[in-house]
Amino acid sequence: MKKNSFLLLSMLLVLSIVLAACNTGGDKDNTATKDDGTTTKEINLVIPSEPPSLHPGLATDSTSGVILQNVFEGLTTIKDGEVVNAVADDVQVSEDQLKYTFTLKDTTWSNGDPVTAEDFAYAWTWVLNPENASEYASILYPIKGAEAYNLGEGSVDDLGINVVDEKTLEVTLENPTPYFLELTAFKTYFPVHKATAEANPEWYTEAGEDYITNGPFTLADWQHSASITLEKSDSYWDKENVALDTVNISMVENETTAVTMFDSGEIDFLGAPFQTVSLDAIDRYKKEGILNIEDYAAIYWYKFNTTGEFTKNANIRKALTLAINRQELIDNITKGEQSPALGMVPAAVKGFEEDRGYFKDNDIEEAKKALELGMKELGITDPSQIEIGLSINTSEAHSVIAQFVQEGWAKNLGITVSIDNSEWQVYLDKLNILDYDVARMGWIADYNNAYSFLEQYNSADNGNNDTGWENAQYTELLKQSVVETDPEARIALLKEAEAIAMSEFPVAPVYYYTNLHVKKDFVKNMAPNALGNVYLKYVDINK
Image (cartoon, rainbow, N blue to C red):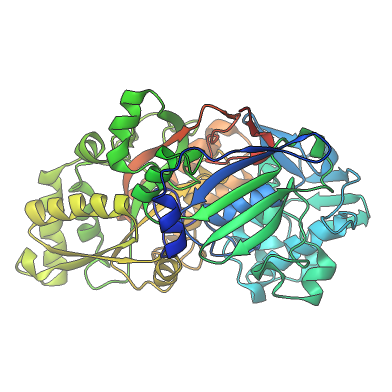
């Protein structure tokens, strides 16, 4: 998931929230008795920044994503790691695996209107319309005609999206896509209330009567850069199985502040995507026996601006990649049982469990050789002539990691490295226009498949690329993998593509994530899945 906001993020915390965080008055009361004698249940959480966008077709980060996946719902969803029907009541797949026919349940929007096949067709077509500049449009490319239309080379009339009737949506794919029903659970595939979106193009910028949703919760309040409140939806088709009545979410940029809030009982859960456990609290939570460590199909990497003065050179990029001591970073800094990343696809992904042998961790000897070659190619005689900017978004954790890497590059390569940080939205903008040399980023799999990690680099124009790098052979291998029906052959093609990227180093893999979180004992059924998603629909409070 692009521009992930776990272990990170942005936005200055308003003073009132800081003061609240410093109040050690004890646990908040999470339950109350209503006039009819029933009990209401609340949970208190934090996210690390203002969500950059609460439009399903524009959001690219996990902070926005965790809100969207709890106020909207797609044709399918993920439960206990498996795809299950959501708005779809039935799914029929043709024998050739190219045509999916979705029959919708009788569900309603939060304003009482029925959710229709047209709402899905409208949302998907909107994302693919090049005028809307959706950075995640490529995730709809399995649909017939989608890529051509999005690139301005085809017509909307050629899209394989057919509204048969109000409750029937027929989707034709370009090629068999075994994980397509995982895709329909992803935020970019969520429906949008067509009538409202057409009447008010800014419908998604504020809470209110125009922010119409179809998920288990509604967006009851949005105080920008301060807080978000979700409330249980009375119109949700499965509301009887939603335990929480209210979700109170503060925006807290500082990880240490978030830890203080958890320790004092101000919040009930801490861990991505709801902020992150600060590095200096990990050992203490381990000793207390409350730190949970989950497997995570995600990677922390440094992206290179391949058009930069020095980082345009592949050997310089190789030198920087090899001269990172990943294991020492994990042992002494991150401390979360992560694994050194020696490729672009995490070992949690099927078929990529073993090291592919692209490079060795902390290989200073080979790094120096690559540096010498790069300097010769650039006409540089001394490493001190190389000045690299290492960009991060504002975060204690990213700052400490960057300082560790900065020290290693300066010591082992003799280059000059400066660190700059920006708040989250400014940071994303800088990456989009290649206004950086080296920049940190995380990526969580959108679906549990290697293609999710590799596809973003299929073109320099891909909205999730941010490196300026592309390679025709790499792109062709990815195209071949899409049409390959044999699973083993498909994995081989993806490994071949990964090998090409790891010979030119548009990114420097750093480590494969684990997901660390702590929660209060009374919080039940709350833990991120392997893709980092938390579905509040299943969470309960037992206090």
